[in-house]
Image 1 (cartoon, rainbow, N blue to C red):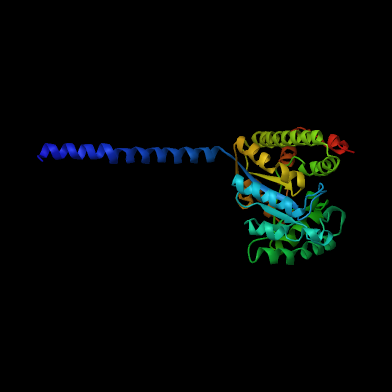
Image 2 (image 1 turned 30 degrees about the horizontal axis):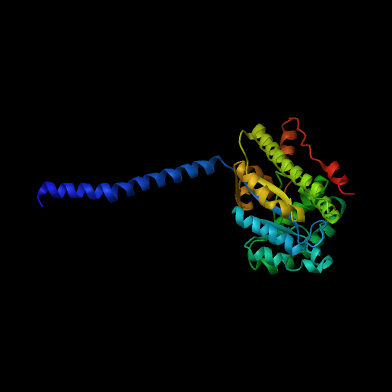
Amino acid sequence: MGIEGRRNARARLRARWIAPLAVAATMAGAAQAAQAAQAAKSVKMALTFDDLPTHSALPPGVSRIDVAGRLLAAFHDAGTGPVYGFVNGVGEEREPDSVGVLSLWRAAGHPLANHAWSHMDLNTHSLADWEADLVRNEPLLQRHMAGQDWRWLRYPFLSEGGTPEKHVAARKMLKARGYRIASVTMSFGDYAWNEPYARCMAKGDAAAVATLEVSYLKAAKDSLDYSRSLSATLYGRDIPYVLLMHAGAFDARMAPRLLQLYRDNGVRFVSLEEAERDKFYAADFKTEATSVPTSLEEAMKAKGLPVPRLDLPFADLDKMCR
């Protein structure tokens, strides 16, 4: 083969193998860049679930293990990453059949944290009693978390003391015990659907359950739009949101559709740790009295801005299937 023939052979080789690989590499690079750009524009959300292992009423034939299993399957299918479950240890005493929920949660790779042993309200109890309730939960968390980080607190009822003095004293105690606060910047009152669901299932009222499903997803979408609107008004951006949910039977039923709704609206699920690294949550790590708001509504008030109303159908839910 002459020089010209060898040149032609090399050209054919490049055309057949090398050029397609180069094109593929370019396309892969473009796809990665597009994915990175999309991630940068996406709405970050940390999922958190309160009241493990027992929340609200159960419909006939459904166990606490069933509820946890359905939630965990939905997390897996949606690729949520780690989802903190905030624990009230008293649940295992009150409902022995719930023993196993926390182990199941951990086996699926999700962390647990403190929600006080009996869900005690700091605003209506002494700090000493509330601290004892908090500490009573710790051995359970230590056992299940096995050396991993469980020192996040979700205040029961989101009550932080009621007075500046108690608020500061509680923060100092929590700091001394190594806790960080898991604030809430998005919620649609999901807990309010669980009891009506149990009642309607007990009555076999499929039409009422369908109504609950529609209103639940509408409330979730309205809440997403509401929090995003407040954040845009305040900061001209989306902060990473921390969503408050509960480990209830209706939440478990709706979890696949709820998580899909969020993804359809540009949400990317992140860990609680990643969300709370945003400067909005800086006050969650302070122990002194501070005027820095810990919710979007408080931030609006601090700037003298009117807080719009988020209409949720609590009154209608309370009447269903009575």
